[in-house]
Length: 501
Ligand code: ZN
Image: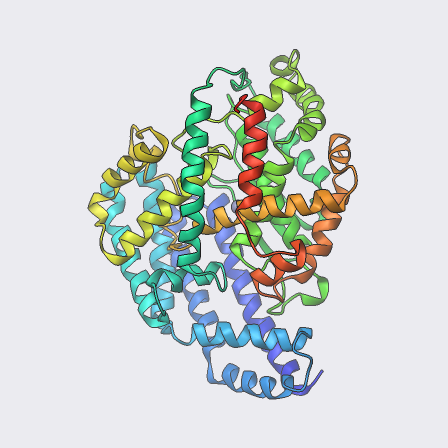
């Protein structure tokens, strides 16, 4: 490896370490930090965020990058070094557009805002959160104006999470999905009462913790390089490929939330644990985009975790953990209950059919807020009206409505659509994996998840973030992203479950 590329790699490794240090503070904030720690923590995170930004956008980085580009010009364009330099150029050009003071202010403001949001949500008090949200949006608009865009201001935000994806493409996908999802939701609602009621009982949290830890391990989650904790809003975070942590949450009177939160976060974690060792501390490490990341979590949570085959594996484990609740339960009963479709208020608890309508609503509202067409003060009313329009239900309070998600308090505008992109890709990957792995479902019934994990390792994880998301999708599935696999999957599965024509 030539001199400048090596020097650039060393500098990027240091900048990467700083980012991971901020990550540890963030993980602690979300798991164990007492509420009183919020003010000091926001200063600490803002400081590291400023240092990271300064170091990355410094002239020295720009010089190293320019020299590395000159060296990389003679390399194969698809070599690791050439791709690394290309990826860095893209993020560098983006980062230098944002003034350091704005980056630090954004980090401080959104850390504080998350604390304000958490209190406002607990008290279902939107007015208490509104000024903070207003300020977040103001900063987001400033960031957009620094970044610039061709057609739509939302493009500048979406691109941060889904490289290369355009707002118009997302709109087109939703235009296709929307009528299909609304029709399917209504058709199923007419068939309500199909033996799909939740399996109720008392589920001690210690037992749920033990069960979910084991489920994650069975999927292939490596606890020597990870751990599971509890957080109000489950997430996965990594400080290296050898320290990838998940969080989940439990309710004593409900078992599904904990199990499926764990399966979901395990899907994210498997992707990060599968990032190639040789890419560590470079711009090639880790998951490539939020959408591809979400395809991994949703694949394990839904395509695997809500399949009949997985229910065959899961039932004896549930019966062992909670004998009273599950003693007379059949596989069919379990399968129906984990696939119950009903319009509901909370996105993260939504079934596979209605979930993307929750995302569509957020995508629309974000664009309207960003452009100023929608005022923050009017947000709860508009939220509720659109819930009624798409799902036929109106949230009884803002806690179960506009205040439910952490994203806007964290400044994550432009992120929501990646959940739907992930759902579409999960179905597309699943179709491909089923063709590639003989007897995939029989393996899952027996709790053998290694064949699927190995296939994902080879066809998705092994690329790290070397290629663009659309390149990874093509390499893994042989085709560009399409919503067809997902709509066919929903139609087949739920058509059979609810006896639809
Ligand atoms: Zn996720």
